[in-house]
Image 1: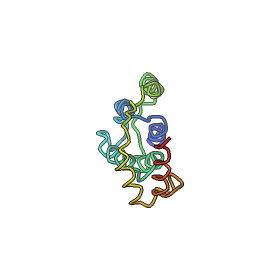
Image 2: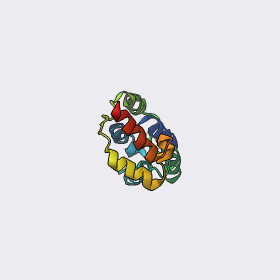
Image 3: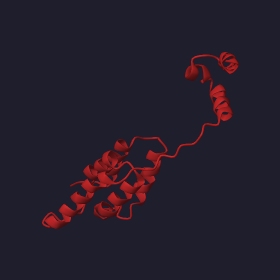
Image 4: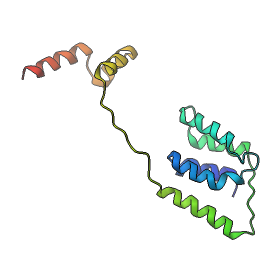
Length: 137
């Protein structure tokens, strides 16, 4: 199993921070040159910022650290690693937090970006006129 395969599996199958941590706990020690995972942490922050998709960053990581240190003769180690990879799919996802929309801030942001008409398919003034008509009812 090479580091590119591990990185792609991590990028495609692990969607939460908890899944990343479990995956890294098991597999990071096999990556020759980045056993502490510092480089992976930096690349994860690039992915989190939205600059590059996780799959592309996995290929970059596989290119930077192309070798792994698996003992091919030790089936128990490989089975444990594969089991953890499969079990990482069953971890519970992140909790969704809902927050009430601050209408004034939302409108101010849309108007500043010139997107109000695109979002609501009418001008801000027409929207307020419609709102006033509905208030009368």
